[in-house]
Amino acid sequence: MKTQLANKTQALFAALGSLLVLFITLPLLCTVIASSPTTLWQTLLDADVRDSIWLTFYSSLVATVIAFVTGVPLAYLLARADFPGKRLVEGLVNLPIVVPHSAAGIAILTVFGRRTLLGRAFGFLGIKFVSAVPGIVLAMLFVSLSFLVNSAREGFESVNPRLEWVARTLGASPWTAFWRVAFPLAWRSILSGMILMWARGLSEFGAVVILAYHPMVAPVLLYERFESFGLAYARPVATLIILICLVTFVALQTVSRRKEAV
Amino acid sequence: MTGRVQVRDLWLDLNKFHLREITLDVAPGEYFIVLGPTGGGKTVLLETIAGLHRPHRGQILLDGEDVTTTPPEQRGVGFVYQDYALFPHMSVAQNIGFGLELRGEERAVIEKRVDEMARLLSIDHLLHRHPGTLSGGEQQRVALARALIIAPRLLLLDEPLSALDPTTRKALQRELAHLHAELGTTTVHVTHDFEEAVALGDRIAILNAGRVVQVGSPDDIFRRPASAFVARFVGVRNIFEGDLHPGEDGYQLLALDGTQIAVVTERSGRVHASIRPEDIFVFQGTLRSSVRNLFRGRVVEIADRRALVYVTVRVPPEFTCIITRHSLEELALREGQEVWIAFKASAVHVF
Image (tube, rainbow over all chains, first blue to last red):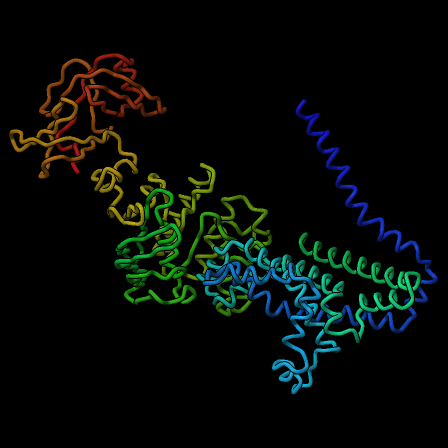
């Protein structure tokens, strides 16, 4: 009796769950098959499209590298150290997930805009953010860094601190113990956080569009085509972006999984 | 010989663990046991000696040198954890050689020394394996090899045998004794197992609730426990509490449930007393002896432990005695039977 109830329950859950899965796959699938291979090829030959895809990949990668250099140390501290305000920092790290991304764009603009103190300081170094690649990088960094920090923190938390302690007794400085023990053991989590963050950066529209309409990242280009020419013209670009993201994401996931098996 | 450890008035609070006025003096080459119940702060004490926690108060001296604020990597202390704490991303050889690698030894030297150490611990056939594929006993040997290869002044063992099955535990216990005899490394070994402590330790410190409650040889601790806690913890049976009264011929009388037993002590008032089960004779009929404590009682329980048999005799109070299986058969003891028990006044430890 009880197992039958469980089966019925599970059947109901399966029905509800498949609605959601269908909701993800159907639009994506229809978009992909709506464009003929010829159209796709022509879209790929469009220099604007290629440039924007390249710009998107590159900017998101730079954002991920910046978050790697600063976020991995932060993640390690959050996993290992106790300090006043730790809970606050943990909350702040997750803030970008809940802030509307257009609002995040406004916030970044407020601090890094042309006439602001930081904007001017960077201007002296020849770096400008508004309508420029550095602005795109900042926008992507802001909205996606939580993924890397959280994943890396979980990775470090899963490493028994005793491993580092034993390394210390064997002669390792805290720095060496980190690089020889904690980092390699947390690496898979860090890598998977980097992939997630990078993928999240690729897809960012709201924050990016406020800082830089031009140069156009792929989501902005897509929006522009849709606004100016309509669905029929926007769809091949969407298809291309979806396919490229899908292939890259699966490839990276596979690479990071294979590392786990070794 | 080096490796003297002195801990002076050490205080530490770490989460739920507290160490209070810990003072220990471990002689060079000594095998020193810290014995106590789980949660008593034994591991934290070891970690503090290793330099992994900074004490709030007190000093730690290694060979007379104050190392209280020295970072662990400069102390030359080997550490072995109950859960082995092997580096899962390194091979057995890399684990063992890690300390030498950090010291910048040449590859050939490391290989040679790892090989020697692995042979000493009979794990030379495992060098290319990864820790995850080894049994518990093998992993603990690797952890020992990794700690010993840096020729530590002091070896700290945190419950090294507790995670192992009984057979492996016995084998590795013998191995520890053998290694200590061979290398002479000063060792502080933490355990909650009294038999392990007696088998290995030159001296034992009993740690309870963050305080050292007694330090002594295994025999001292077993025969003369300093408190009821120690007596119970080390498994002494026949612990009683009662009032002392003056007796004759230099004896005092201890009143227990209406029975007066003769004891030799300089204490007075309310005391604890313990009698080792093997110090109590069980017999039938009459016994011609100068023995002071001779009582008639009823056998209430016979617990069979193979070669030795625990016989509980109710006088009252109840005394637990150990007799051999041979005596059990000779006396034809059954539960409910009346017997005599006898023990010397000097066999009663008053504390």
